[in-house]
Structure formats: C-alpha cells, structure tokens
Length: 515
Ligand code: MN
Ligand code: MN
Image (cartoon, rainbow, N blue to C red):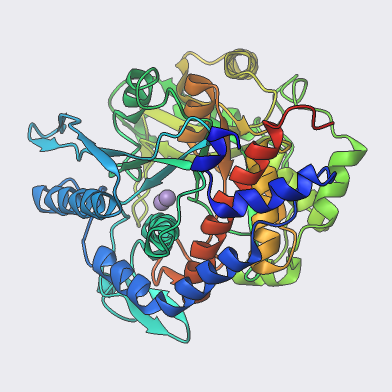
C-alpha cells in the first residue's frame, strides 16, 4: 500500500476502493462517520450554547474607546487562544502595539490570534477568518434582556455578538472539537486568524497579513469567513462578491465665518446653494447615477448571470415590510438584487457646516462640506471613478459662475470583491450545505463592503469564500441581535461536513490519470 495512505482517515479509503473498482467519482465519505459527527453535535449542543454564552458575556466592544472595553477584548482574545490550545492548536497571539487616540490617550490594540492545526502536506489547508469584537450595546437601547447575557427565547439565542461574529467562530471550533472527541483525524489542515478590532476598521490587520504572507499564510490554500447573513430565514447561502466603496467630500467655501442673511443675503454666491446644486446633479429620481461614463466599466450582464437572480429565495413583500419601506425603486426581485449587487449606487450622506438644529436661525453658512459615496462593482476602477466624479462636479460648478472655492476629495477607496464560484471550496461548501440542509444554497452577493476579503484575495492571491450561518433576521449591529440555536448547531455540522468535502475534492483531484 502507498505509504501516503497510512496517514489518511478510514473514510478516505472507502472511496479509494470504489475508484479502484473503476468508478470515476467518489461515493459520499463514510456515511457512518458523518452520522456520528452529527449525533455528537446534537448531543453536545447545550455545551456548545454554554460556551457561546460565556463568550457573549465578555463586553468586547471595540467602538467605545475606553480602557475598560479594551481590557474586555484582551480577555476575549485570551479565551479564544485558550480554547484553540485546548483543541491542540499551535497558537500565536501577535502583539499589535498601541492605538494613539485623538484625545492623546493610547489604547492597546488587542492581539490577533494566529493558530494552526495540522500541517500534513497531503491535505489542503483552509484558513478561517473571524472577529470577536462587537458593536456597542445597552439594555436601555431597547433590548429585551441584558445584551451580554445570552438569553434563549423560542430557539433564538439573543446577545450582542451572537451572530456577529462569536457564534460562527465558535461553530468552526465546535466542528474541530467534534473530530477530536470522536478521535478522528482532521480531514484538512486548519489555520485561524482571529481579530478583535473588526468593527473599528480592522486596525493594522492589512499590515499583518502582508507581513505574514510568507510565513503563516504560506501553506494556506483557501480562506473562509462567516461574517455575513443568509438572505432568507431557512435557506443557506454562499456569498461570492461584495461591493467596494469610494467616499467623496465636496467642500464649497466662501470664508470660514458664517453670514447674517438679512445683512448679506442677495449679494453673495452662497456656498450652500452651490453645494445643493452640486449634490443634486449626482443622481436622478430613478436612482441612476448622472456622472458621465460612470457605467462604462460595469461588467455586462449575461443571460447566464440573469438566471442566477431568478432562483434566489427572496420574498419582496416581506422584505419591504421588514424594513418599513413603502416602495422600492424597482418592482421585481431580479432588478432589486442586481441593483444591490452588480450595479453601482450613489448615496448622499450629509452636509458638514449646515444649520441642523431646530428653530429658525437666519444664517448663511460660510463653508459647507457635502459627503457622498459610490458603491463600486466589478470592473470599475477607483482612480477612473475619482477622475469622472471630479470632472463632473467641476463642470457643474463652473456653469454656476460662483466666486466660491470648490474642493473635491476622495477620502476612502475600497475595491469590490468577487470570487470564482467554480473554485474547489465553493463546490465543497455547496455539497456540505446539501448534506446538512438538504437544499442548494442561494448564491448571493453582499451590497456592502468587507475590505478584508479583497485584502486576502489581493495580498495572498488565494481563493476567498464567505460561508454565512446566520439568518436574514439576526439583526447584527441592532438591538436584540440573535442567532437561532438551529443555525448555530446545524452550522457546526456544516463546517464539519465542509472539511470532509474539501478533503474529498482535494484527494480526488490529486489522483493520477483520473480523466
Ligand atoms: Mn462582523
Ligand atoms: Mn459587524
């Protein structure tokens, strides 16, 4: 027997024997093992929920810049490192230094946990990214119970961070611990990169990824994250794209001081009037962006792609009701999804320097700054968009013949991300979803921006996949955030099944003369 086979778990041998018998594709991995894994997870679900409640109890809020919250994140990262060590991982808590706050104080940046389980060259290596910091939460905001006390009502586990992102991180650990408990070899090598500053913009993470490229990430084949939600309550999804974002400010300035509208109104080019005209020139009432040539680089829609939107499980009426909107810009599910995922959008966010208090102050603001952003999609180029926006606004402004000064700046730019869904890990995830949930996943994109996905893709040149566990109504960042017990437990099974499918694909692919 090939000595390599000695290292393989027994379930690998079963399909191998079938292959030798002349079959080209492998049979499902030993149904016996999968069954035992699922039973173990079902039987231990209360223990898994208990650990989640211990993690939710840590107030790892990364938004409020207070030393007490930073201590909580440090504690959270420590708990995660301990848990990973208990599972047999080699754990490295990377010191990230300190963060200098505008008020002069400095706060520790919590360590990033890098962990590694197994380094068998015959197995694929999957790296899981997650975060353990949370958004702020206070009972007074309208929570049914204390947000840091995991509370179960009707199978819903309420608590800050339950779905974003503590539950999904733990589901991954539950899957690993199940293999351990059953004394089964892990079918894949697993690495973890877990951070504690995601909600605050993943401070210093990009630099760390760059630095660890040749070391920690060198053997990594695939990157998986579970930091978004399904688009339905019951049907799982796979996410294969996110929009980027370019954020603009347009300043119109006469002078730094304001004016009295009785004393000066009528003889000035008013900055606010200029700005309102500029902002009003950006987008029309049908949502179409009016900046010339902005749609030129948007990937053309193919018939094949159009079909993808038809099969997605989205109840438009319920969706509209749930977010309390009377009517969308578009009438069909397909149009709505395409305008969220594959077309750019322009949103106007606010005006700095505008009078926004109650009452009737008769002021002419001397300087105002308008803010808007454009969600970018493949294959828009950020520097091209920047040029188009500036040219357009300069054109509008010059027609006004104003004596004010206009300055346009792009203050933030994040590229869109899109994955190749024919990659192995997408195929393996689809199969695992079918096994656990008995259905095909919704193949979805996310209209918002998750910068780290693009960083992983660009810096490491690896395939990135988003495999969410949470249901559409989990309420991340909101009051009464929750994860359903069902999602958490079936999600733990999903990850275990995913490991097995990954190994199977990898193994079949490395067989000689398989065609
Ligand atoms: Mn998150
Ligand atoms: Mn979040």
